[in-house]
Length: 486
Image (cartoon, rainbow, N blue to C red; front, side, top):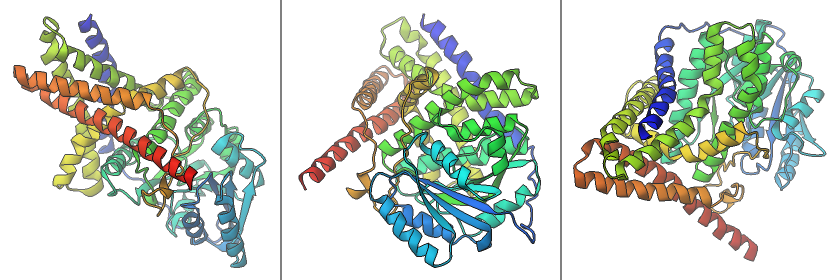
């Protein structure tokens, strides 16, 4: 029975590993597209939309950086799409009044309800917008002054419906978690987005740090809050309609990475669940549509990328069962370990390529970050599996935005916006880490040295995620109790 499970996992995981390697091969075969030079004498009018919800730690930084954009002042307007339920709205009102006095075209927009969450806010603002182009920036982004000057010229081609900039990271070096997150996102932007864009394949708007042609959004049916990834959903609808998307890696927009593990889990849950919801919606149209086969293959891998999480979770449990099982199951130990090693090597090779693309060279700390990042992805496999299942079953849930801290730090003020996490899954992850500690002892006692790398990676990954989440939950509960007593 275990052999059958292992064979199924091998057949299911092999395409994921092969796809990662194919991205590396294709990247070096593609040429960079020339960047357009200027906006011309009569640049198009731009509406900058800022969807916010309870963002009092970062909203001033956002508004002032957007107001400082280097673009003709009579050719762009700012919409602050404010769904906040706390004092953020008072802060926004104060800053907007100040900016209006200085001549900035900015509007503070409040909706009657938060229907549709972020997608609903964007659609509400779209109906009131006067711009030919729509720029979207989340609350934790700080656009450089030349953001519009560099991005707008791409729309000189009337077929272009969206331009996506690359994300930079304000707090990449804050802690071990943010360094791993930055590495994962570099993989997405430096490899995945680059290959898909240069190859003329379907790729997605990343929800922020990009511009849309207003007519493209309208032609594709507008923003829809039925999935948790409204950006991915609209991206495929627009490209199905024939619009061309552009990825501009030379435009880097700094952003804030979630530093607490609980905020990271919130973000990953939304991305994984929303991607599967979007796959449910669009895979039939993708596979049955009159698109080239390479669009269908890459689009399938793109929309189903998160299905790797249940497979990795199953492999972790199989690895644990084989290590702790009595003979004859123990005869599978070398096979499982070799299979896990092969999968790990492909992923580490992918991360190594990302590091080289980003920095050009690797120092000692970078070499250490590669296995740590792999361990983190293993540790998150249970949580992401739950998200994938919820997305596949289309379990309804609200849009929980990723908490942003700005300059509040990790003190009590910075924890006020953290989404509440349950105890159950972190306890399971911690228990699995303890089981791998036991398996590590068994492997050492029997001299199964081939099993040590897998044991150590699983032990650290599940321990980091599980114990880190439990610690953050306890800290949050203590902080909540202190606020209640104050």
